[in-house]
Length: 245
Length: 351
Image (cartoon, rainbow over all chains, first blue to last red; front, side, top):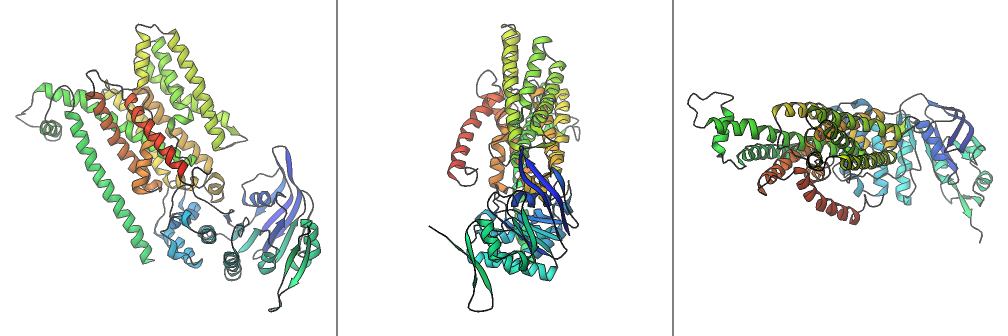
């Protein structure tokens, strides 16, 4: 359960968000869309607790696992080392990983289908593999809520598909509440129950995918003509931009 | 699962093998170092003299003078070299992890300069002895508090502001030291200040050693206890915070521990630079970045390194060289090498 109430954020005397309110029910999936610099990461940071609101509140009931944008480690940690760090809360201030922590880390590496990479240096993995490892790290914290900041940015279609499928599976099998930001409306269509369209610092639209994720809303949001395009099979559709020259 | 356990076990075995080898090397170096100096003593005699403390020999084959050279003159400085080398190397490893930067050493947070100023001021005003120890230590810790005040904005401290605050405090105390030197009597106090600043453990006695141990051992244990938190913080402050790490507590505990160690070293032995910068690099190439392995490895290599540096200090010239000069002579080219390598490799250079 996530509750954002009248949230405003000011950074370096500049207003980033004003009076945002929304909630995500347990087991819900919220996709956040908006132009670059509109405050998506700031909103996620407030929910995670990395950013202090200047007014209002962002609260959550349950443990949060956070997956930042494409992550790079300064030191040559192995994949297993990185996933074990997800156990920070369980390990405590003066502790070190124990057998149980290794078991949990290995379990989630397996679940993300990257168990075979455990001894590889994390920085040598592809972008898609790194995202899956970071999701395994977040899950190792035994979280109830997964928050992902543009989990598919810089990923090719194949890797996007793997990450989105993984999130869908985590939501349906483990009942995880998921909040993620994205620039691809298709990701919202695939897995979200609700969508937040961030128009500017104080205007936004929040509701179910069916109500909010429309070609008209997206065209206004991005200031580009966007049309609904149906696939020839499967009854699925997507949104395609029309770039005018 | 079994494969992971085996892989993890393999790393652990390798680490233990390296620790064992280096520990043996450390003992050998320590005993060898006791034989080094103007008064010749055979290694076997050193063993016998030391062993006599465990099981007294009724008919000793050595002279009382030899026993004094080993136990009163050389052993304290050997132990001091071990303590300083291990403490500074651990401090450097912890700070490099915390700052996510391989080019950082304990002097970056301003404590070394603060302690150096305290010591020089005490030499100017009083002349020497315990006031130098006390003032160096007090100014070292005081400079940490100033750095903390300068670097904290709304209760949070960013790495960049901390480094800048350290630079500011270092620059201030650097100037203050120059003023003290200018005021010092050029025949007596100025040479004393200059020699003290260069770093030396030549005159270490057991009392100094006890003070040094008090300033270095408990903070080193504290740093080791936080080994896993340093791993997490080396991913970045936001990431560590999101993972649930109490980063302010970890940061300031490490800074306080490093400050105690640095201030303790400067207070008892003057400035011994570069150890905290180069040793963690050597350790990292042997055991990787995990601080659970890196910190003890740095301590071991740091201790061996400073022992050897002290041997050079005692034997290179007729007059004894200050160890601070030798650590700088070795450290500077090593630093340049690291800088070149990090520039050519992706990762560090991209930030």
